[in-house]
Length: 100
Image 1 (spheres, one colour):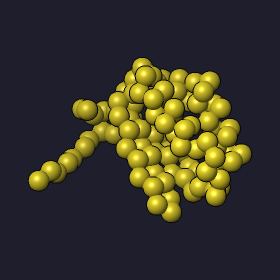
Image 2 (cartoon, helix red, strand yellow; image 1 turned 120 degrees about the horizontal axis):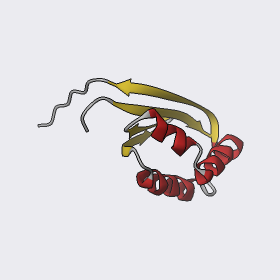
Image 3 (tube, helix red, strand yellow; image 1 turned 135 degrees about the vertical axis):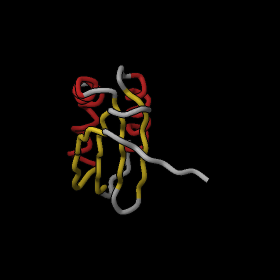
């Protein structure tokens, strides 16, 4: 990926409810990867979960947010799986990396 591109940073705290969560997370990953403008995703979970998805442009992010299956996942997330979450959308202008 070469900048500029956008990052959607989703940080969350889960509830104790597990039912259906893994299946929905897998579906959302599959569907996001099929969306025009999707680049890649990174995720980590401990007490706080952080998922960062990268997108070509803001329009691609808007379309993903309005995807019907994603809307269902958002609703179930608020009702069942998350006690709190925050979504941040950022423009990535530069990136640096190191690999040994």
